[in-house]
Image 1 (cartoon, helix red, strand yellow):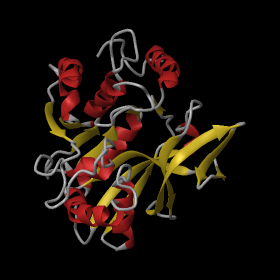
Image 2: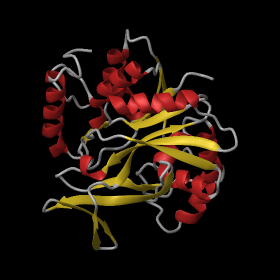
Image 3: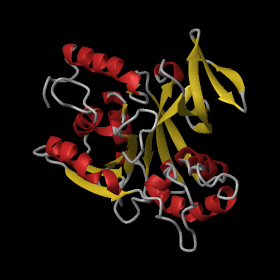
Length: 303
């Protein structure tokens, strides 16, 4: 079996953050969040990395990222998530600027990624344990009988920001830690110490221990093929209803495969705290978190 690869989604526009957050520094040494993820991933065993970016940010992105990866003994590839990467016969709706979503991002790796792979967001910090768990799973998975995937699960209380709302895949698992449900909630926030999500103008409280996806998944290449097979149907169903903002979500494809009996997903529990920069105001707390981790010896000052 080929050595697992790490796919890093970095094509988001950063509209809520107000800039190219994927390459914003988070410490005095010039590290960005991706550097911490790659450090942890290399320690876990990953050596092949694929970045999903937009062509328009390639120059700025690579000027920062490529020097950080030099000399680390890793293989790096780039693929591009563009609006016009659509099935034959489809066109970009007039006025559409929003990317087509995380499942479309993975679809863009077709022909580039051909080994079991993990998926992460470029602007999220996951913790070393997460990479160890997903790498170990991928080293031993196969598609015998059905697709066998994995997800690193986080507690919702460890993944929210005080600065606004976030999107999370809210999950449930059975007694064998197999994923049974995942629902994408796009407006999760905090108020008065409580966590809630908003749907159709109504707020619903969430238990702080609720399991959520932070888009750290483990797949075989079969997942890419399934995204390709399903994208046109997604467009047929959603373009007329929401041409400017509909998104082809990675978790939605996963759950459809579970419901169809084509896949199962092992939930790898992780109690680490997530750090990320959804909003510009998040940066100060993220910088402080990484400073504390370095002082505790989790990371060296330079790496």
